Length: 78
Image 1 (cartoon, rainbow, N blue to C red):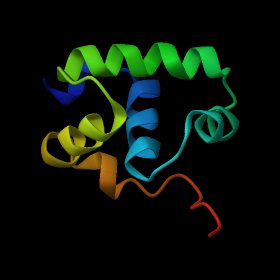
Image 2 (image 1 turned 90 degrees about the vertical axis):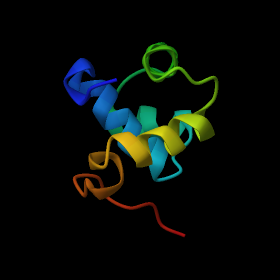
Image 3 (image 1 turned 90 degrees about the horizontal axis):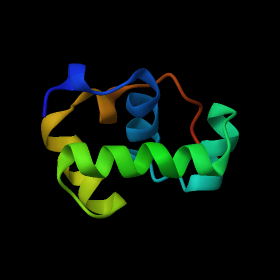
Image 4 (image 1 turned 45 degrees about the vertical axis):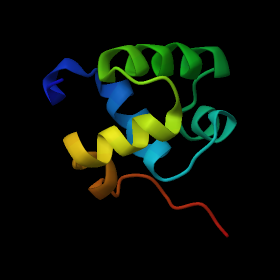
């Protein structure tokens, strides 16, 4: 799977997933509904050939390095 096959919103969501964000946190950060987040996650799972967010984060770390190096989002407070 090539990076250019992801939409901009999918890239944003992958970045947040790799940072450990939950659906509601992604929803709040990106200003979208939880249903929209779930729709994008389903698409990402399909594109990456994975079945859950942990597998997606592992796949992204290996194949899409932007997902762990993108610093456009504020970090969550501990």
